[in-house]
Image 1 (tube, rainbow, N blue to C red):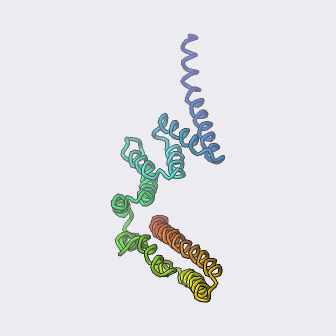
Image 2 (cartoon, rainbow, N blue to C red; image 1 turned 180 degrees about the horizontal axis):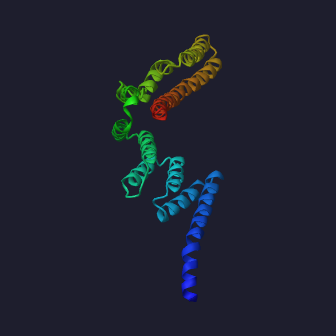
Length: 250
């Protein structure tokens, strides 16, 4: 009789203890992420996902941790594995996870995969939204397949141009004011150096030659850095446009 009572007690209360422990562990994982201990937080979410692979809340926490670490491919794989599992999922949950997978595919630059997920999403939407969905898909396709996407500048070309004509590389990358300023500074110092040597003042000439050389090499280095910066900015802007389209998913 005692053993029967003990078994009944364990059957009634152990699941509750297990749920409470999991909630505590989830709060601890959130605490680690909130305090900047992202690697430890990700490991804690990974452990929780291993023990509770069918828990949607754990999946969301683990995926967010992977996103913070910019492991978008792993986040995408995680979401797709969850969808392919045998766990019972509601229609809303499936659509939500599919949308998040499309976002992860965008951030991971897996554009064909993203479009494949988008096709699935569009087919699952009601007919009342079909016109809006089709317009959305056309928009995302045009962003992905437009010419020179994302728009970038050749860093080598910009550097060569600035080496030949100071400032021209910056003008090539769209920085007209900086390019003209660089040209004027280098040209003014070269002219001043020439005047110094031609008038019999070599000290004057060497001084401005050194200053001019500094501006010249600074112009080349600055052009290289500016071209790389513009490429990063254009790429980020283009990717943000793609993600904005996903955010507006009906």
